[in-house]
Image 1 (cartoon, rainbow, N blue to C red):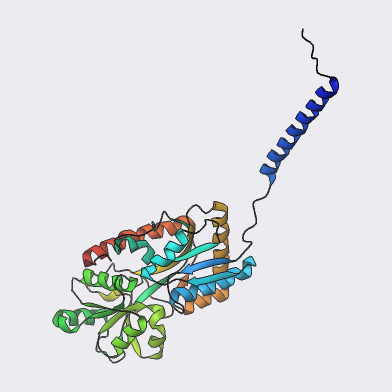
Image 2 (image 1 turned 180 degrees about the horizontal axis):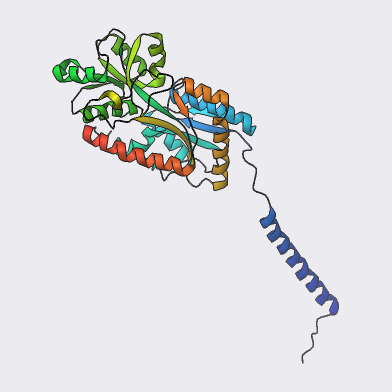
Length: 339
C-alpha cells in the first residue's frame, strides 16, 4: 500500500472544495428545474397590420388591442404597414424575434398570396406560429337603390341577355372581394366582366353612378349605405342569412343553377414569428379568447359585420390550408396573372 505524502490539511482543503463544487452544481440543477418561466408580457406588444388606418382590419385590431392591453397590463400597439398586398407587413413579422412581442394580423389573403405573386420572401404557413382566429366576415352583392335588379336571378338573366352592359365592381385584383366575384362568374358559367377599383369608396361611387351594375363588397364596407337606403343588398355570400340582415337571402338560396353550393367568406387571425415558444403562444391565445368573450368587444365586432370567434392554433392553420386550396383553384380558373 502506498501512503499519500500530501499533508492532511491540503487533503482536507481539496475535499472541502470538491464538496462545495458538488453542492453548487446541485444547486444550479435544482434551480434549473424549479425556476418559474419568465413572466410574459413585460413590455409592449405590437400587432402589425398590412392595411392603412381606418379600414376593417385596422379597426378590429385596434378594438382587440385595447382589450388585450387592459388584461395584460401592457400596451398593445397597432402598427400599420400597408403595401404590396400585405407582403410588407408579413415580411416584417417573419423577420422579427420569436418572443411574442411582434404579431401579425392575417386574413384569407395571406393564405392564397402564393398564387397571386411570383415569389414571396416568406412562407405563409411555415414562417409563422399560428395563434388564433379573431372573426369571420362575409360579402354582399349590392346594387343601387334604383336598380331594376332585385335578385341574383335578375342579375344572371341580365348578364346573359346583355353581357356587354352588365359588370361587377370590386376592389383590387386578387382581393377576397374580387375572387368572390370570380367564383360567382365561374359557377354561373357567365363571363361577367369584373371591374377592379382601388377602394370601397370608388366601388360605391361607380355603383351609384351606374358605371357598374352590381358590386361585391364586405358587409362592413357597405352596411351603412344598405341600412341608409342608398344601396340595396340582393344576396349575401354566407351559408346562412345574417342575423342583422334577415331579409337578405344567401347566393346559394337563389335557385340559379350552379350556385347551390356557393360560399365565400373571409376571416382575420393573429400569428407570431415561427418558433415562438409554445407557452407564449398559449398565453397569447388565452388573452385573445378572453378579449373576444367581452360583451362590448363582441358587440363592436357585430356592429362592423364580423362574427367574433377565437380558435386553437391548429384550427387557424386548418383554415389557412383550406382557403389556400379553394382560392388557388379560383385564381387558376380566372387566369389571374401573378404579380
